[in-house]
Length: 411
Image (cartoon, rainbow, N blue to C red; front, side, top):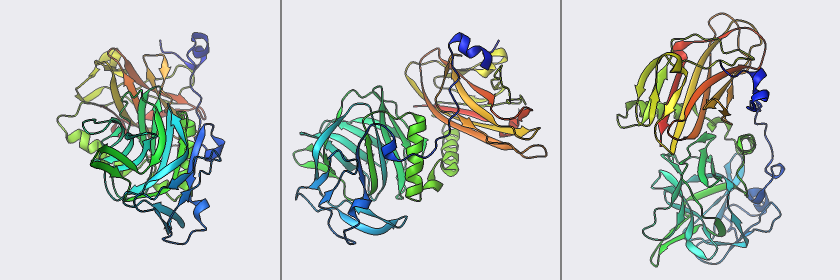
């Protein structure tokens, strides 16, 4: 018997509340340590040198040019009618009142002309800090000089040369990353704190370093805690609207490219499942799970069985970071229906990432596809299910099998 909404409180398994990520200003979210944005630089003319970039959070962590290399320049009318800061060769800025971060969330509105760009170095440890676009494929926390690879926030990213929103974070010692609202986390463990002391230069050795030349920065936010989904998405939406980047969030084109790449890669560790079950997901008590009756590819650390276990995707390897994509085609049989899609782990834990269909068109041939992307850390023996919940009017909202799939890839 499945666990329905009426039983959850009794069994101590609360269903997470469905929350929309309403836009919030950075200052309204607790834990803001430093904020660098361009409004305080508007007194400068186009191409003027940026000697001091004031911390708009009021915490005094101003960036001050120290005379090493070339000072950054203000570029007017660069993005959404606002100026941005262009970092130049070896331009180095000290942090007035350096700060320390354990678990954290860092928002960056930026573009990069080149790969291997230094964001900041630790106070007193110039070989430790954050490197962006390492070989154009990752963002790293470097923890040493030559011979140290560093710990990845993200892997498999693409530097497209356009402005976007990157989020770097650490949650309970694990690194996570989001690009334009899509999770690209490595999940790697990182126990070392960040001591933010010098911007735009990292040392590798006595004669080797990296600078921030070619970075164009519109806004930087530093929080001294990991922001859960609702807060993280709300700040992302604020930045996207402010900087005219809303169209980049959750790009379907980028998703399609990623799925095509996975499908065509024989070495990829993936599970790819379909269904021929037109189950009704608009249920309110006994929440239905999707039965994956058409396995197309099952490999790597994933297993899937037929019959009663067809709803479950199992993991066979400890410490597997699984990136999950779910697409559910739904056709409504009555007006006012709204279906929520969740991931349930081991029959007890709901993932904090969910998706809703919005109010569905009723009748005819109208099909709505609900998409959910999430990253889960799984150990051997763990299993996950895709669960539907009605949050609107009563009536049937049945799966459309040919528009429904489940894909998970292992990192």
